[in-house]
Length: 441
Image (cartoon, rainbow, N blue to C red; front, side, top):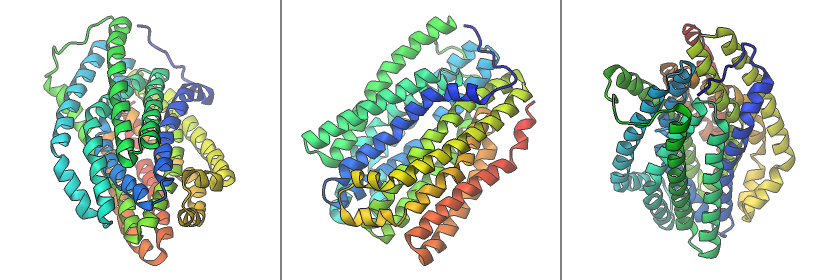
């Protein structure tokens, strides 16, 4: 297979062209969340939206905590791709698939404990708790498929096949929307329908693209994936170190989102529901801006594999500038269409009214957060995971302390202020560790 040789002068245009397919796939992910939120938000009772918010927050925290299956795969594969070591790329995938199966089985077996801890952690009505239990009981069964998708996406991003990784995500999201809409609107399954829709979409997508990837490796790399030479201590130690650092970092990040849900539930189910709606705007912006980060991961890993410092620095500069400029456009669009979108998502007047009062945070956060999103991609591509872990530990500790006090004095606005400061602090900590990457050249 021919190697894609990036020139030393990585331009904004090149990054943009790589990012375009990722834009569409990343748009599909939050769109699924918005559709699910809209389905629950138009059932006439806040408890459906509150239950979905809590249950998805819990499952997201658990599943995203193992996002190292994607992030770790990208960094390692990209650097191996720069060295033309295709056989080791194949072994890396097999190692991660085996690891994913073991973790997924453990999570499924822990389902009763997950449900029990969730019920004790959140203060909601008995009816809402029952809906939460239904969602988690079904959604947890999709974990093996979701982990498989993580690894496949990481592989294609690592070899700069962003069009394939994007197609995967688009198909999964489209299936999720179709199944969830049918099960909720036609069969009236409310929360159960949303969970089943996610389950079906993930398994169908994972099966289709696993078969495609197996044939892709045979055709493009001219090798057959095997289980030979998987147990190499140095490789396993490196894989474990990278994965464990990312696991800690991502667990802390997802906990911060769960913390937002927790503080919102303490303010009341209306605020919990409103924060769920508002968070869809933040997630939409984040996934859109992450397109640059995802594309940069592969470029950074490739540049490090080739030890091309000039290419690396230009990729960093241009991707950060593109991300910030795009975030400004997103904020302007939110400013124009915020109320219209809110009115589509929910028909409950009190939720609309409270949402309108918080629109300023939705405008400010994307530009401020754009830098931390992009730095994440740079550090992932460089496999500089220890610094990501340490930076996140400091940032989350800062966020928790600030959010407790700001919420006491400013209510829900204090919660959003603390989240804004959290994104800013993430950028500052990663910027502090940036010179560690330069030592790789």
